[in-house]
Image (cartoon, rainbow, N blue to C red; front, side, top):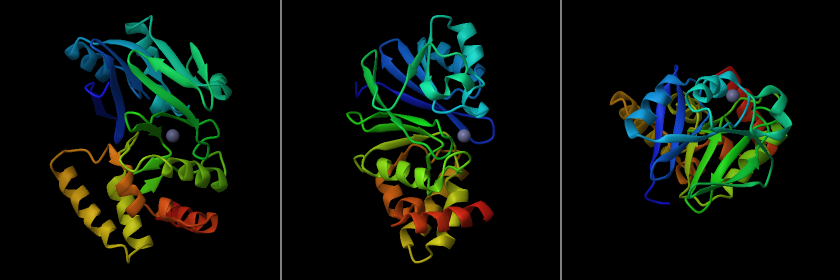
Length: 242
Ligand SMILES: [Zn+2]
């Protein structure tokens, strides 16, 4: 599978839609905020869309599903069973611990509540890639809208257990803003300042900071460096006001 490609399409203000090739001519898409750029991309590649994977119900992760279903009527739509009532119509409901095999690619489903109560991630330990939606961002984490700080803290702790070489495909380009907060929250951390500088240069060139490397997050992300729920909560409260 390692020869297969993953492409991130920048859409809306700061969203990414990730397209993952699963065999020579087929692909899946994660969190389609919109449909047109995905259709154009797939047409350019001559790839068929077989599955849409949804991490959570927010519209900037799901609004493209209808258009893609119209263009690819046979494509399956996968999402969390507990959220089926508020997701676009699912063909396959999944839950914590499920193992999905699509083409030559396989994903584990992790339930990572906090940003929303029904947030899931699609993870391939073998390929060292994780599609984490709005849980983990570059030097930051998702806002806690529905879940509790405790849930978010533990969701992040789970992601910390992955191989540090895992590539994190999150759904937003937030690294610069989060880096500004991290530089203030943990000013003694020199790596944060270096990474922020590098991120600026990438963005100036129109390049992405995503995928993130988990190893970099482990060194620079205040929410992963937080040693306790109390530390995490202090950072999350401060970030909300930043
Ligand atoms: Zn969201």
